[in-house]
Amino acid sequence: MKIDSITLYPLQMPLVTHFETSFGRIQNRECVIVKIQSEGLTGWGECVADHDPGYSYETTGTVLHILQDFLVPLLWGQDLQDALHFQRLVAPVRGHHLAKAGLEMAIWDLTAQRANQSLAQLFGATRSSVEVGVSVGLQDTPADLLQRVNAYLQDGYRRVKLKIKPGRDVSEAAIIRAAHPDLKLQVDANSAYTLQTAAALQPLDDLNLLLIEQPLYEDDIWDHRLLRQNLRTPICLDESVTSPRHARYALEMQACDIINIKPGRVGGLSQALQIHDLCLKAGIPVWCGGMLESNIGRATNLALAALPGFTLPGDISASARYYNEDLTEETFSLNPDSAINVPTRPGLGVTVLESQVKKFALAAIALQP
Ligand code: OSB
Ligand code: MG
Image 1 (cartoon, rainbow, N blue to C red):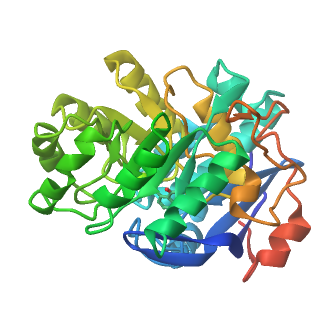
Image 2 (tube, protein in one colour; image 1 turned 180 degrees about the horizontal axis):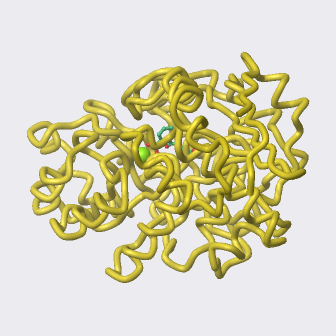
C-alpha cells in the first residue's frame, strides 16, 4: 500500500479524575493521534507519550519531532506491506518506541481493513471478551484510597492495582486487603525503589498480592533478579522490558515471574505479539498494561489481550473510567464479569470521530510526500 498523507494531532484530554503515580500527578492526558490516508482508506493510531518524561523518556514533544523529521519521511514512496515491513524501514531510528508504535498502529488499522478482518482475527486471538481491572492512582489519604477502591468495586471491577511509592506502600495495601480479603490485588511502583529501599516492601508478602510491578530502576533487569530472590510475591516487569530481546534477557536472567505488555513501550503491536509468543512458550504469564489510552488505543489493547497468553486481567478499564468524552462513536463498558468485549469489525473496529479529535487537538500537522 502507498501512503498518500499523514496527519499528526497532538491532543490534550481531561481525565475524569486526576491520576497520580510515583512520578507525578496529571489531570490532563496528552497523546499524539496519527491519521494515515492510503489508497482511499484511513488508518488511525495513538502514540501514548505524555507531556512529561516521567514514565518514558519520550514526550508528546519528542514524538512529534521523531515522527515528522525521521519516521514519516522513511515511509514516503514505499509500497508498505505490513507492520514487520514497517519495522524494517524504521530500524535505523534508535529507540523512540512510543512514536514508532503509534505509527505502526495506524498501519495495522489499514492492513486489517484491507484484509476485511478485525485486529483480533488478524492476531489469531481466541477470546471475544477479556478480563480487566482498574489502576488506582495515589490518593491524598488512605481514607480517600479506600473510598476510591470501593467506588471502582461498585462499578464492577474485580481486580485492582494500587500505585505505590516509598512511604505510601505497605500500609495502604494492607488497608485495602483488610477491607477486601478476596480481591485480586496488585501494586505498581513505577521504578520508585532501589534494591536497598525495596527492603521495605517485604511485608507485602503477607498480603496475597497477584504481583509487584516494576519496583526498581526503569532500565534494570539484573537487580530485579536479585530482589526476586527475597520476595515470595511474583515480580512483574513493565518499564524495563522495551523489546522482545529484553523480554528474552529478563526470562533468561529469571528476573521476573510475569510481564506487563504495552504495545507503545515495546515499539508496536508487532513487537508485543513477539513478546507474547516468547512468554507463552516459556510459561510466563503476561497481561496488557495501559497508558490511559483513548478508545483508539483501547481498541487495540483489547484485541491484543484476547490472545491466549494473556492470562491475567489487563489495565484496560471502561471508557468512563478515563474520559467523559472520547474519540470514537463506540464506548467500551464493563460487563458484569469484569470483562470488556473485543471489537469485531474490520480494522481497529471503532469509528473515530475526527470532530472529537479536532476538539481536543492542540495542533494539526499535515504531512505529504
Ligand atoms: O505504569 O502501568 C503504568 C498509566 C500511565 C503510565 C504508566 C502506567 C499507567 C497505568 C494506567 O497504570 C493504566 C491504565 O491505562 O488504566
Ligand atoms: Mg506499570
